[in-house]
Length: 302
Figure 1: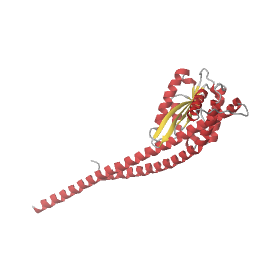
Figure 2: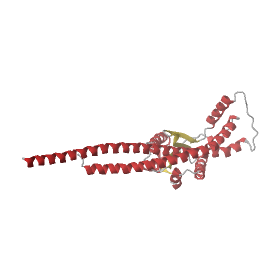
Figure 3: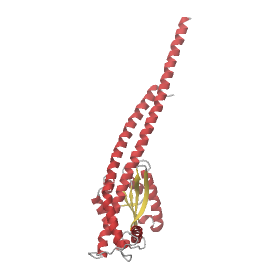
């Protein structure tokens, strides 16, 4: 049986931990609110860009683009988003699991030595390094993981696009966590390049058919459509990359807030259990002392 002092020390220790987890929960919740505001601010821009692109594609199914060229895959880049720190539940474990699955499939196609990883977040960077993957080292990756910013993403997107166009990389895959709600985050892996023009055209035609069955749209474009798309698609790609970063950041904060809430609740429950144990031990000690006093008094009275 633990002594009263040991139990009291444990209670104090758990109470201190509870204060820390409660504070971390409040910080994560505040960051989540900021992340949601960033998503809501960026969403109209991203939605409008995709709307312009799909409308252009829907008007002409014969469009071809260097961004959509499918060729023999010799080298693959995987852009993965995790967090820089832990204590966020299964967030990083889910990213690592999906990354491992995607990397395993890619290794069967091109070999592990022909996979290069762009790790946004210290946790995925550490895992990729321990797994002996080639890593694109850039301090900006970890900086914008905690503080998403569009200008660095624009530069990184341009670098990825340039490497794809120069055939240095033949396929680029995104692995990130999609934020759906406070309690639901969905892990995703999408092909970033080559751009799926056929899929975008089908989606645009489907959306157009659903909303305007008997309407057709005629566009007068300046400059011509090919040149316009050559400027628009890189912007859409940068937008999609930034959206993945914002999604991942919001998912991380939601997962951390939920994990810290659970930890705080568990700490509170543990304090209750330890308090009951402390009271029982204290009562037992008092009872033993009374028995000793009564026993001593009985011995003296004889």
